[in-house]
Length: 318
Length: 215
Image (cartoon, rainbow over the protein chains, first blue to last red):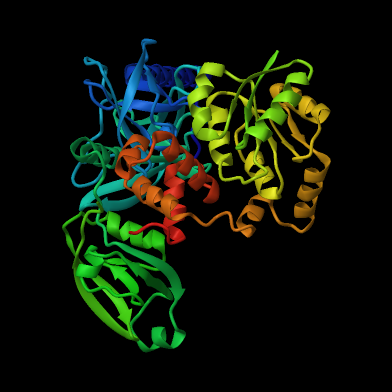
Protein backbone atom coordinates (compact mmCIF):
# COMPACT_ATOMS: atom_id res chain seq x y z
CA UNK A 1 0.00 0.00 0.00
CA UNK A 2 1.31 3.43 -0.88
CA UNK A 3 0.62 6.61 0.93
CA UNK A 4 0.00 9.77 -1.07
CA UNK A 5 0.94 13.18 0.27
CA UNK A 6 0.05 16.57 -1.14
CA UNK A 7 2.73 19.26 -1.55
CA UNK A 8 1.08 21.18 1.29
CA UNK A 9 1.24 18.14 3.56
CA UNK A 10 4.90 17.56 2.60
CA UNK A 11 5.69 21.13 3.54
CA UNK A 12 3.90 20.71 6.82
CA UNK A 13 5.78 17.45 7.56
CA UNK A 14 9.10 19.07 6.64
CA UNK A 15 8.37 22.02 8.85
CA UNK A 16 7.40 19.73 11.75
CA UNK A 17 10.60 17.71 11.30
CA UNK A 18 12.65 20.87 11.23
CA UNK A 19 10.92 22.02 14.40
CA UNK A 20 11.69 18.72 16.12
CA UNK A 21 15.35 18.99 15.14
CA UNK A 22 15.58 22.59 16.29
CA UNK A 23 13.98 21.69 19.60
CA UNK A 24 16.31 18.72 19.98
CA UNK A 25 19.34 20.85 19.15
CA UNK A 26 18.29 23.60 21.56
CA UNK A 27 17.58 21.05 24.29
CA UNK A 28 20.97 19.43 23.74
CA UNK A 29 22.78 22.76 23.90
CA UNK A 30 20.88 23.54 27.10
CA UNK A 31 21.94 20.24 28.68
CA UNK A 32 25.57 20.97 27.82
CA UNK A 33 25.34 24.53 29.19
CA UNK A 34 23.90 23.32 32.48
CA UNK A 35 26.54 20.60 32.91
CA UNK A 36 29.50 22.69 31.70
CA UNK A 37 30.31 24.48 34.99
CA UNK A 38 31.07 21.14 36.65
CA UNK A 39 33.71 20.24 34.03
CA UNK A 40 37.21 21.48 34.88
CA UNK A 41 40.66 21.41 33.32
CA UNK A 42 43.33 19.47 35.23
CA UNK A 43 46.99 20.35 34.69
CA UNK A 44 49.83 18.35 36.28
CA UNK A 45 52.51 20.33 34.46
CA UNK A 46 53.03 17.75 31.75
CA UNK A 47 52.61 18.39 28.05
CA UNK A 48 49.01 17.23 27.86
CA UNK A 49 46.32 18.33 30.26
CA UNK A 50 43.34 16.26 31.39
CA UNK A 51 39.77 16.97 32.41
CA UNK A 52 38.11 16.58 35.79
CA UNK A 53 34.58 16.52 37.16
CA UNK A 54 33.53 18.60 40.18
CA UNK A 55 32.31 15.67 42.25
CA UNK A 56 31.15 17.70 45.25
CA UNK A 57 30.45 21.38 45.91
CA UNK A 58 33.15 21.50 48.59
CA UNK A 59 36.09 20.97 46.28
CA UNK A 60 36.39 17.26 45.45
CA UNK A 61 37.41 16.69 41.83
CA UNK A 62 37.42 13.29 40.13
CA UNK A 63 39.79 12.63 37.25
CA UNK A 64 41.91 9.85 35.80
CA UNK A 65 45.05 8.66 37.56
CA UNK A 66 47.06 8.89 34.35
CA UNK A 67 46.03 12.53 33.99
CA UNK A 68 47.94 13.40 37.15
CA UNK A 69 51.07 11.29 36.81
CA UNK A 70 53.00 14.20 38.32
CA UNK A 71 51.22 14.68 41.59
CA UNK A 72 53.06 17.58 43.29
CA UNK A 73 52.00 20.72 41.42
CA UNK A 74 48.52 20.03 40.14
CA UNK A 75 46.20 22.90 39.24
CA UNK A 76 42.50 22.90 38.40
CA UNK A 77 40.99 25.52 36.12
CA UNK A 78 37.31 26.13 36.81
CA UNK A 79 34.73 27.08 34.22
CA UNK A 80 34.78 30.68 35.50
CA UNK A 81 38.47 30.94 34.63
CA UNK A 82 39.85 30.66 38.16
CA UNK A 83 42.93 28.44 38.49
CA UNK A 84 43.32 26.77 41.88
CA UNK A 85 46.07 24.56 43.31
CA UNK A 86 44.85 21.01 43.87
CA UNK A 87 46.01 18.33 46.30
CA UNK A 88 45.97 14.65 45.40
CA UNK A 89 43.73 12.85 47.92
CA UNK A 90 44.61 9.47 46.46
CA UNK A 91 44.57 7.36 43.37
CA UNK A 92 43.33 3.97 42.30
CA UNK A 93 45.75 2.80 39.61
CA UNK A 94 43.68 -0.34 39.18
CA UNK A 95 40.72 1.60 37.78
CA UNK A 96 42.74 4.67 36.73
CA UNK A 97 40.82 7.01 39.04
CA UNK A 98 42.32 9.88 41.04
CA UNK A 99 40.64 12.21 43.49
CA UNK A 100 41.77 15.80 44.00
CA UNK A 101 40.81 18.50 46.46
CA UNK A 102 40.72 22.23 45.79
CA UNK A 103 40.43 24.52 48.77
CA UNK A 104 37.13 26.25 48.05
CA UNK A 105 33.42 25.66 48.53
CA UNK A 106 30.16 26.52 46.80
CA UNK A 107 31.28 24.92 43.54
CA UNK A 108 28.80 23.82 40.85
CA UNK A 109 29.02 20.07 41.49
CA UNK A 110 28.00 17.63 38.78
CA UNK A 111 24.63 15.88 38.97
CA UNK A 112 25.58 12.22 39.37
CA UNK A 113 23.48 9.34 38.07
CA UNK A 114 22.81 6.82 40.81
CA UNK A 115 22.60 3.06 40.82
CA UNK A 116 18.95 2.24 40.11
CA UNK A 117 17.52 -1.16 40.92
CA UNK A 118 21.00 -2.54 41.52
CA UNK A 119 22.18 -1.45 38.06
CA UNK A 120 24.40 1.56 37.30
CA UNK A 121 22.74 4.11 34.98
CA UNK A 122 23.34 4.25 31.24
CA UNK A 123 21.31 1.98 28.98
CA UNK A 124 22.69 0.73 25.67
CA UNK A 125 21.31 2.97 22.92
CA UNK A 126 20.83 5.96 25.19
CA UNK A 127 22.02 9.33 23.81
CA UNK A 128 25.00 10.77 25.68
CA UNK A 129 27.34 13.75 25.39
CA UNK A 130 31.03 13.56 26.27
CA UNK A 131 32.15 16.84 27.87
CA UNK A 132 35.74 17.90 28.49
CA UNK A 133 38.13 20.84 28.76
CA UNK A 134 41.21 19.71 26.84
CA UNK A 135 44.24 21.97 26.56
CA UNK A 136 43.50 25.68 26.19
CA UNK A 137 40.51 25.17 23.91
CA UNK A 138 37.83 25.55 26.55
CA UNK A 139 34.77 23.32 26.71
CA UNK A 140 34.37 20.63 24.06
CA UNK A 141 31.41 18.32 23.51
CA UNK A 142 30.92 15.17 21.46
CA UNK A 143 27.58 13.41 20.86
CA UNK A 144 26.99 9.68 20.71
CA UNK A 145 25.13 6.79 22.24
CA UNK A 146 26.05 4.21 24.84
CA UNK A 147 27.08 1.42 22.50
CA UNK A 148 28.00 -1.24 25.02
CA UNK A 149 28.31 -2.16 28.68
CA UNK A 150 30.58 -4.48 30.60
CA UNK A 151 29.17 -5.44 33.97
CA UNK A 152 31.35 -6.20 36.95
CA UNK A 153 31.44 -6.00 40.72
CA UNK A 154 33.77 -4.47 43.25
CA UNK A 155 33.52 -5.42 46.90
CA UNK A 156 30.03 -6.72 46.18
CA UNK A 157 28.91 -3.41 44.59
CA UNK A 158 27.66 -3.37 40.97
CA UNK A 159 29.87 -1.56 38.49
CA UNK A 160 29.78 -1.04 34.75
CA UNK A 161 32.24 0.06 32.13
CA UNK A 162 30.41 1.92 29.38
CA UNK A 163 31.38 2.02 25.73
CA UNK A 164 30.31 4.99 23.62
CA UNK A 165 30.63 5.96 19.97
CA UNK A 166 31.04 9.61 21.00
CA UNK A 167 34.50 10.66 19.81
CA UNK A 168 36.95 11.21 22.65
CA UNK A 169 39.74 13.60 21.69
CA UNK A 170 43.12 13.98 23.46
CA UNK A 171 42.48 15.67 26.79
CA UNK A 172 39.03 14.09 27.19
CA UNK A 173 40.30 11.65 29.84
CA UNK A 174 38.58 12.47 33.12
CA UNK A 175 35.68 14.15 31.33
CA UNK A 176 32.01 13.45 31.88
CA UNK A 177 29.63 11.32 29.88
CA UNK A 178 26.23 12.88 30.50
CA UNK A 179 22.78 11.59 29.66
CA UNK A 180 19.82 13.58 28.34
CA UNK A 181 18.84 14.50 31.90
CA UNK A 182 22.24 16.16 32.33
CA UNK A 183 23.37 13.50 34.80
CA UNK A 184 26.94 12.17 34.77
CA UNK A 185 26.68 8.48 33.88
CA UNK A 186 30.40 7.94 33.45
CA UNK A 187 33.93 9.34 33.42
CA UNK A 188 35.64 9.10 30.04
CA UNK A 189 39.01 7.40 29.72
CA UNK A 190 41.25 7.35 26.66
CA UNK A 191 43.86 5.05 28.21
CA UNK A 192 41.52 2.09 28.72
CA UNK A 193 39.84 2.57 25.36
CA UNK A 194 42.97 2.74 23.19
CA UNK A 195 40.93 4.31 20.42
CA UNK A 196 37.49 3.25 21.58
CA UNK A 197 35.28 5.49 23.68
CA UNK A 198 35.36 4.06 27.18
CA UNK A 199 33.81 5.55 30.31
CA UNK A 200 33.91 4.16 33.84
CA UNK A 201 30.39 4.24 35.20
CA UNK A 202 29.64 6.79 37.89
CA UNK A 203 29.28 3.86 40.31
CA UNK A 204 32.94 2.89 39.79
CA UNK A 205 34.14 6.45 40.36
CA UNK A 206 31.86 6.89 43.36
CA UNK A 207 33.07 3.64 44.97
CA UNK A 208 36.69 4.71 44.41
CA UNK A 209 35.94 8.23 45.70
CA UNK A 210 34.30 6.88 48.86
CA UNK A 211 37.31 4.65 49.58
CA UNK A 212 39.88 7.35 48.80
CA UNK A 213 38.11 9.87 51.02
CA UNK A 214 37.84 7.35 53.86
CA UNK A 215 41.23 5.62 53.63
CA UNK A 216 43.33 7.52 51.07
CA UNK A 217 43.40 4.35 48.98
CA UNK A 218 41.10 1.69 47.57
CA UNK A 219 41.36 -1.41 49.73
CA UNK A 220 40.59 -4.39 47.54
CA UNK A 221 40.91 -8.02 48.40
CA UNK A 222 44.55 -9.08 48.71
CA UNK A 223 46.10 -12.54 48.80
CA UNK A 224 49.82 -11.80 48.76
CA UNK A 225 50.96 -14.05 45.92
CA UNK A 226 53.05 -13.76 42.79
CA UNK A 227 51.93 -16.01 39.97
CA UNK A 228 52.77 -17.18 36.49
CA UNK A 229 50.20 -18.33 33.92
CA UNK A 230 50.71 -21.99 32.94
CA UNK A 231 48.99 -24.38 30.53
CA UNK A 232 47.32 -27.27 32.33
CA UNK A 233 48.25 -30.82 31.24
CA UNK A 234 45.72 -31.91 28.61
CA UNK A 235 45.26 -35.28 30.27
CA UNK A 236 44.36 -33.63 33.55
CA UNK A 237 41.84 -31.34 31.88
CA UNK A 238 40.18 -34.30 30.15
CA UNK A 239 40.18 -36.50 33.22
CA UNK A 240 38.59 -33.86 35.43
CA UNK A 241 35.65 -31.52 35.19
CA UNK A 242 37.88 -28.55 34.34
CA UNK A 243 36.63 -26.23 31.63
CA UNK A 244 39.80 -24.17 31.41
CA UNK A 245 43.10 -24.80 29.68
CA UNK A 246 45.34 -22.70 31.89
CA UNK A 247 45.76 -21.54 35.47
CA UNK A 248 48.15 -19.54 37.62
CA UNK A 249 51.15 -21.28 39.14
CA UNK A 250 51.98 -19.71 42.52
CA UNK A 251 55.61 -18.58 42.42
CA UNK A 252 55.73 -16.68 45.70
CA UNK A 253 53.62 -16.55 48.86
CA UNK A 254 54.17 -13.42 50.92
CA UNK A 255 55.26 -14.01 54.53
CA UNK A 256 52.30 -13.53 56.87
CA UNK A 257 50.02 -12.88 53.90
CA UNK A 258 46.36 -13.98 53.74
CA UNK A 259 47.48 -16.63 51.23
CA UNK A 260 49.98 -18.10 53.68
CA UNK A 261 47.50 -17.96 56.54
CA UNK A 262 44.90 -19.63 54.33
CA UNK A 263 47.23 -22.52 53.48
CA UNK A 264 48.24 -21.66 49.91
CA UNK A 265 51.61 -23.15 48.99
CA UNK A 266 54.35 -22.55 46.50
CA UNK A 267 53.63 -24.72 43.45
CA UNK A 268 49.85 -24.71 43.81
CA UNK A 269 48.03 -23.84 40.59
CA UNK A 270 45.17 -21.43 41.14
CA UNK A 271 42.11 -22.14 39.00
CA UNK A 272 39.33 -19.94 40.41
CA UNK A 273 38.66 -17.19 42.95
CA UNK A 274 35.06 -17.59 44.04
CA UNK A 275 32.99 -17.71 40.85
CA UNK A 276 35.77 -16.12 38.77
CA UNK A 277 37.72 -18.62 36.66
CA UNK A 278 41.39 -17.69 36.73
CA UNK A 279 43.46 -18.32 33.62
CA UNK A 280 45.76 -15.31 33.75
CA UNK A 281 46.80 -12.50 36.06
CA UNK A 282 44.10 -10.18 34.74
CA UNK A 283 41.47 -12.77 35.77
CA UNK A 284 43.01 -12.92 39.26
CA UNK A 285 42.93 -9.13 39.57
CA UNK A 286 39.29 -9.12 38.46
CA UNK A 287 38.48 -11.88 40.95
CA UNK A 288 40.13 -9.99 43.81
CA UNK A 289 38.51 -6.69 42.71
CA UNK A 290 35.06 -8.21 42.98
CA UNK A 291 35.68 -9.09 46.64
CA UNK A 292 36.31 -6.75 49.51
CA UNK A 293 39.05 -6.99 52.11
CA UNK A 294 38.19 -9.27 55.08
CA UNK A 295 35.84 -11.23 52.85
CA UNK A 296 36.12 -15.04 52.84
CA UNK A 297 36.44 -16.55 49.40
CA UNK A 298 36.71 -20.11 48.08
CA UNK A 299 39.84 -20.74 46.03
CA UNK A 300 39.92 -23.65 43.60
CA UNK A 301 43.39 -24.99 42.94
CA UNK A 302 45.45 -27.92 41.79
CA UNK A 303 47.90 -29.43 44.28
CA UNK A 304 49.89 -32.52 43.37
CA UNK A 305 47.52 -33.17 40.48
CA UNK A 306 44.42 -33.09 42.66
CA UNK A 307 41.68 -30.52 42.78
CA UNK A 308 41.27 -28.74 46.11
CA UNK A 309 39.05 -26.04 47.55
CA UNK A 310 40.48 -23.69 50.17
CA UNK A 311 38.55 -21.04 52.03
CA UNK A 312 40.76 -17.99 52.48
CA UNK A 313 39.96 -14.68 54.14
CA UNK A 314 41.23 -11.88 51.95
CA UNK A 315 43.25 -9.14 53.56
CA UNK A 316 44.48 -5.63 52.89
CA UNK A 317 47.99 -4.99 51.69
CA UNK A 318 49.96 -2.85 54.10
CA UNK B 1 71.85 32.73 23.58
CA UNK B 2 70.99 29.08 24.19
CA UNK B 3 71.18 28.30 27.91
CA UNK B 4 73.02 24.99 28.39
CA UNK B 5 73.19 23.01 31.63
CA UNK B 6 75.85 20.31 31.90
CA UNK B 7 75.02 16.94 33.49
CA UNK B 8 77.86 14.46 34.05
CA UNK B 9 78.81 12.26 36.99
CA UNK B 10 82.47 13.30 37.21
CA UNK B 11 84.06 16.73 37.60
CA UNK B 12 86.51 16.04 34.76
CA UNK B 13 83.69 15.21 32.35
CA UNK B 14 81.77 18.30 33.43
CA UNK B 15 84.81 20.53 32.92
CA UNK B 16 85.39 19.15 29.44
CA UNK B 17 81.80 19.56 28.38
CA UNK B 18 81.65 23.00 29.98
CA UNK B 19 84.61 24.17 27.92
CA UNK B 20 83.23 22.76 24.66
CA UNK B 21 79.74 24.17 25.22
CA UNK B 22 81.05 27.57 26.31
CA UNK B 23 83.05 27.85 23.08
CA UNK B 24 80.12 26.77 20.91
CA UNK B 25 78.49 29.54 18.89
CA UNK B 26 75.29 30.91 20.38
CA UNK B 27 75.60 28.93 23.64
CA UNK B 28 76.12 29.92 27.23
CA UNK B 29 76.61 27.49 30.14
CA UNK B 30 74.25 28.21 33.03
CA UNK B 31 75.34 25.46 35.40
CA UNK B 32 76.81 22.02 36.04
CA UNK B 33 75.37 19.10 38.02
CA UNK B 34 76.45 15.55 38.76
CA UNK B 35 73.09 13.87 38.16
CA UNK B 36 69.34 14.07 38.26
CA UNK B 37 69.02 14.71 42.00
CA UNK B 38 71.16 17.87 41.79
CA UNK B 39 69.47 18.80 38.53
CA UNK B 40 66.06 18.64 40.20
CA UNK B 41 67.24 21.33 42.63
CA UNK B 42 68.88 23.55 40.02
CA UNK B 43 66.40 23.25 37.15
CA UNK B 44 63.96 25.98 38.16
CA UNK B 45 66.73 28.41 39.09
CA UNK B 46 68.69 28.08 35.84
CA UNK B 47 65.89 27.63 33.25
CA UNK B 48 68.10 25.82 30.71
CA UNK B 49 67.09 25.48 27.07
CA UNK B 50 69.16 22.34 26.62
CA UNK B 51 70.53 19.74 29.04
CA UNK B 52 73.86 18.39 27.81
CA UNK B 53 74.34 15.04 29.54
CA UNK B 54 77.10 12.45 29.45
CA UNK B 55 75.62 9.01 30.25
CA UNK B 56 78.50 6.95 28.86
CA UNK B 57 79.22 5.64 32.38
CA UNK B 58 75.68 4.21 32.73
CA UNK B 59 72.13 4.99 31.71
CA UNK B 60 70.35 4.45 35.03
CA UNK B 61 69.86 8.19 35.39
CA UNK B 62 68.46 8.66 31.88
CA UNK B 63 64.73 8.18 32.62
CA UNK B 64 64.96 10.78 35.34
CA UNK B 65 66.88 13.19 33.08
CA UNK B 66 64.18 12.80 30.43
CA UNK B 67 61.51 13.44 33.06
CA UNK B 68 63.28 16.57 34.29
CA UNK B 69 63.91 17.86 30.76
CA UNK B 70 60.20 17.47 30.04
CA UNK B 71 59.30 19.24 33.26
CA UNK B 72 61.72 22.08 32.53
CA UNK B 73 60.58 22.20 28.89
CA UNK B 74 64.22 21.78 27.89
CA UNK B 75 65.78 19.75 25.09
CA UNK B 76 68.18 16.92 25.91
CA UNK B 77 71.51 16.26 24.18
CA UNK B 78 73.02 12.97 25.34
CA UNK B 79 76.49 11.54 24.87
CA UNK B 80 76.54 7.76 25.25
CA UNK B 81 76.56 4.36 23.59
CA UNK B 82 74.07 1.60 22.77
CA UNK B 83 70.65 1.38 21.13
CA UNK B 84 68.80 1.29 24.45
CA UNK B 85 69.55 4.96 25.06
CA UNK B 86 68.39 5.90 21.57
CA UNK B 87 65.24 3.87 22.14
CA UNK B 88 64.46 5.67 25.35
CA UNK B 89 65.02 9.06 23.78
CA UNK B 90 62.96 8.14 20.72
CA UNK B 91 60.05 6.86 22.82
CA UNK B 92 60.04 9.95 25.04
CA UNK B 93 57.88 13.01 24.56
CA UNK B 94 60.95 15.27 24.30
CA UNK B 95 60.46 18.05 21.78
CA UNK B 96 64.12 18.08 20.77
CA UNK B 97 66.85 15.59 21.55
CA UNK B 98 70.26 14.51 20.34
CA UNK B 99 72.23 11.32 20.77
CA UNK B 100 75.94 11.67 20.18
CA UNK B 101 78.95 9.39 20.47
CA UNK B 102 80.97 10.03 23.68
CA UNK B 103 83.92 11.12 21.50
CA UNK B 104 81.95 13.91 19.79
CA UNK B 105 84.01 17.08 19.31
CA UNK B 106 83.14 20.69 20.05
CA UNK B 107 81.71 21.41 16.59
CA UNK B 108 79.44 18.36 16.74
CA UNK B 109 78.28 19.18 20.25
CA UNK B 110 77.63 22.82 19.37
CA UNK B 111 75.66 21.89 16.27
CA UNK B 112 73.65 19.32 18.20
CA UNK B 113 72.82 21.75 21.01
CA UNK B 114 71.62 24.38 18.54
CA UNK B 115 69.50 21.79 16.72
CA UNK B 116 67.98 20.49 19.96
CA UNK B 117 67.16 24.03 21.04
CA UNK B 118 65.30 24.39 17.73
CA UNK B 119 63.26 21.28 18.52
CA UNK B 120 65.08 18.93 16.15
CA UNK B 121 66.27 15.35 16.61
CA UNK B 122 69.95 14.61 16.02
CA UNK B 123 71.63 11.20 15.71
CA UNK B 124 75.30 10.95 14.89
CA UNK B 125 76.42 8.56 12.17
CA UNK B 126 77.46 5.65 14.39
CA UNK B 127 74.15 5.63 16.29
CA UNK B 128 72.16 5.91 13.11
CA UNK B 129 73.95 2.76 11.92
CA UNK B 130 72.96 0.95 15.12
CA UNK B 131 69.33 1.84 14.54
CA UNK B 132 69.53 0.66 10.93
CA UNK B 133 70.93 -2.68 12.12
CA UNK B 134 68.09 -3.00 14.58
CA UNK B 135 65.58 -2.24 11.85
CA UNK B 136 67.22 -4.65 9.42
CA UNK B 137 66.99 -7.52 11.89
CA UNK B 138 63.34 -6.63 12.42
CA UNK B 139 64.06 -5.84 16.08
CA UNK B 140 62.29 -2.70 17.21
CA UNK B 141 64.41 -0.35 19.28
CA UNK B 142 62.17 -0.82 22.31
CA UNK B 143 62.74 -4.57 22.12
CA UNK B 144 66.46 -3.91 22.08
CA UNK B 145 66.09 -2.46 25.54
CA UNK B 146 64.51 -5.71 26.66
CA UNK B 147 67.16 -7.76 24.91
CA UNK B 148 69.84 -5.90 26.84
CA UNK B 149 68.21 -6.93 30.08
CA UNK B 150 67.02 -3.43 30.81
CA UNK B 151 63.53 -4.56 31.74
CA UNK B 152 64.31 -6.34 35.00
CA UNK B 153 63.33 -4.22 37.97
CA UNK B 154 65.69 -3.76 40.87
CA UNK B 155 64.56 -4.75 44.37
CA UNK B 156 63.94 -1.09 45.21
CA UNK B 157 61.95 -0.56 42.02
CA UNK B 158 59.79 -3.56 42.94
CA UNK B 159 59.12 -1.99 46.33
CA UNK B 160 58.15 1.28 44.66
CA UNK B 161 55.94 -0.52 42.13
CA UNK B 162 54.16 -2.38 44.94
CA UNK B 163 53.38 0.97 46.59
CA UNK B 164 52.28 2.45 43.25
CA UNK B 165 49.88 -0.48 42.99
CA UNK B 166 48.41 0.58 46.33
CA UNK B 167 47.78 4.03 44.87
CA UNK B 168 50.26 5.92 47.03
CA UNK B 169 51.33 9.38 45.86
CA UNK B 170 55.04 10.06 45.33
CA UNK B 171 55.41 11.89 48.66
CA UNK B 172 53.76 8.99 50.52
CA UNK B 173 56.07 6.51 48.80
CA UNK B 174 59.02 8.69 49.84
CA UNK B 175 57.80 8.73 53.45
CA UNK B 176 57.14 4.98 53.50
CA UNK B 177 60.59 4.08 52.14
CA UNK B 178 62.36 7.01 53.88
CA UNK B 179 63.89 8.23 50.65
CA UNK B 180 63.73 11.65 48.98
CA UNK B 181 60.95 12.71 46.66
CA UNK B 182 63.48 13.11 43.84
CA UNK B 183 64.60 9.53 44.30
CA UNK B 184 61.00 8.33 44.16
CA UNK B 185 60.48 10.23 40.92
CA UNK B 186 63.64 8.70 39.56
CA UNK B 187 62.43 5.19 40.43
CA UNK B 188 58.96 5.83 39.00
CA UNK B 189 60.44 7.10 35.73
CA UNK B 190 62.75 4.09 35.57
CA UNK B 191 59.88 1.66 36.25
CA UNK B 192 57.75 3.23 33.52
CA UNK B 193 60.65 3.06 31.07
CA UNK B 194 61.55 -0.54 31.90
CA UNK B 195 57.96 -1.73 31.69
CA UNK B 196 57.35 0.41 28.60
CA UNK B 197 54.37 1.91 30.39
CA UNK B 198 52.87 5.33 29.78
CA UNK B 199 51.21 5.59 33.18
CA UNK B 200 51.11 4.07 36.64
CA UNK B 201 47.99 2.13 35.69
CA UNK B 202 49.83 0.54 32.78
CA UNK B 203 52.90 -0.09 34.95
CA UNK B 204 50.83 -1.91 37.59
CA UNK B 205 49.08 -4.02 34.95
CA UNK B 206 52.32 -4.95 33.19
CA UNK B 207 54.15 -5.41 36.48
CA UNK B 208 51.46 -7.78 37.75
CA UNK B 209 51.59 -9.79 34.54
CA UNK B 210 55.38 -10.10 34.84
CA UNK B 211 55.23 -11.20 38.44
CA UNK B 212 56.59 -8.01 40.02
CA UNK B 213 53.48 -7.25 42.05
CA UNK B 214 52.06 -9.27 44.93
CA UNK B 215 48.29 -9.65 44.40
